Image 1 (cartoon, helix red, strand yellow):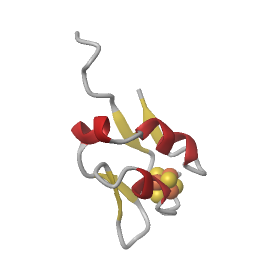
Image 2 (cartoon, protein in one colour):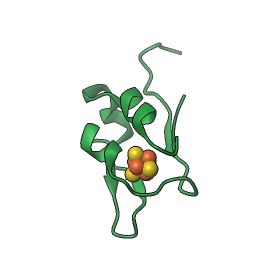
Image 3 (cartoon, rainbow, N blue to C red):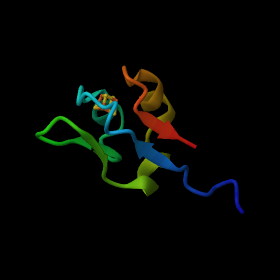
Image 4 (tube, rainbow, N blue to C red):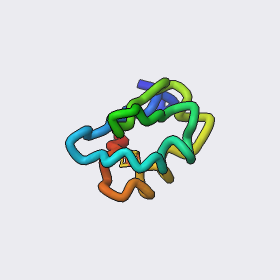
Length: 66
Ligand code: SF4
């Protein structure tokens, strides 16, 4: 396995409150739907922004990054 393999990213929808912070930091990766839930647009874009920051800033810690 390469160290460059894409990080495994997921969102705990039970915890997500749809605040939109993740989509502000990583607009290529996250989007928030009208029902106020975040979803992942593109896992492989995680290299283009800072998903770790998004995971940290998430108020409910709904972003899981492995
Ligand atoms: Fe949901 Fe967290 Fe993103 Fe806010 S930052 S929309 S709570 S996943």
